[in-house]
Image (cartoon, rainbow, N blue to C red; front, side, top):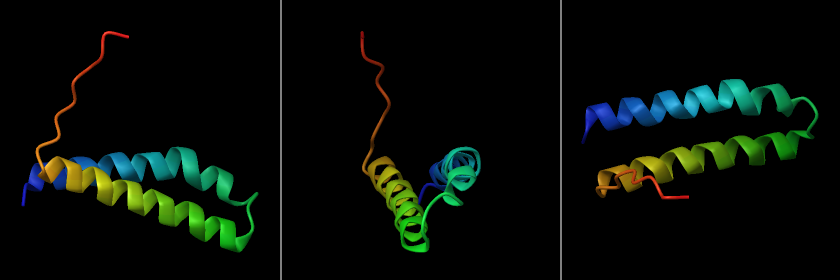
Amino acid sequence: MNESLTEDVCAASAAYCLNCVLPRLNALTPSEQFERLKACFEAALAAYRDGVRGWVYEPSDN
């Protein structure tokens, strides 16, 4: 397991949740709040899985 990758994914996920998700949760119903947080965790796990498989960021020309 790549410890650096784990730390990077955790940091990025936590920063996104803190800055983008949490401030908007109060406007949602409890079930919507759960689904939103669930989606964040799913995205973080997908990013980690992709990283483990060798995903590398390649900027596009656009």
